[in-house]
Length: 113
Length: 113
Image (cartoon, rainbow over all chains, first blue to last red; front, side, top):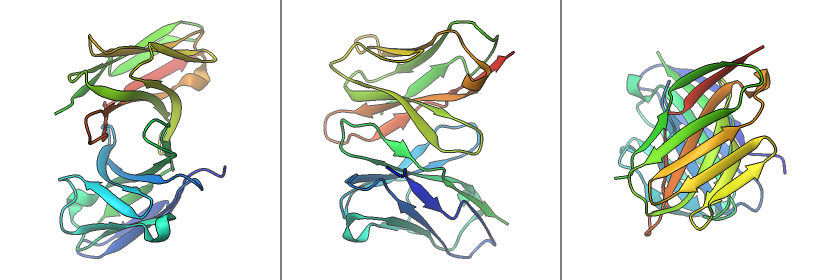
């Protein structure tokens, strides 16, 4: 069990650029979640996958956001045409099932200049 | 819509004290509740997971209880240590199809020597 891995740890970019984050879940975990967290707040749900199927998306996930999980392994979260309000910590979590605990990565901190 | 509140927002105690952190939720139709700790700039570390059919879970110096009917969970930390300093978050997973976790804002705990 090597834990959930997220890359990069930090991303600084100019407004309007596209960014992509990667999450490698714990192997054999079929559920993968993406959250966004801003300072002083709890994580806010964005989307989740069961294997390769994206089962639910939050209303927070505008058309500029897209997530994939090809082959049910790693996942990517892409933000197009970044805006100042996208600055946040993006967290990924995985679990073996609904009734199993979620395990989080250390997140990717996005800063928009 | 599920709302999760954590009280107090911040807590500072001397080492050795026993602590109670509170988590309340508005919709009692939950699937499970999970407690996490988060260190600055890091992801979330799972502490305890309580299923809706359970009343409490224990791990070392930590004990979490769940009272669904009153919409409350408490996290009890015995004999606090400086290493317990972190933000503690609870997440409630709704039942009834969505199973999306809703997080509270957390309780920021400082244990001073």
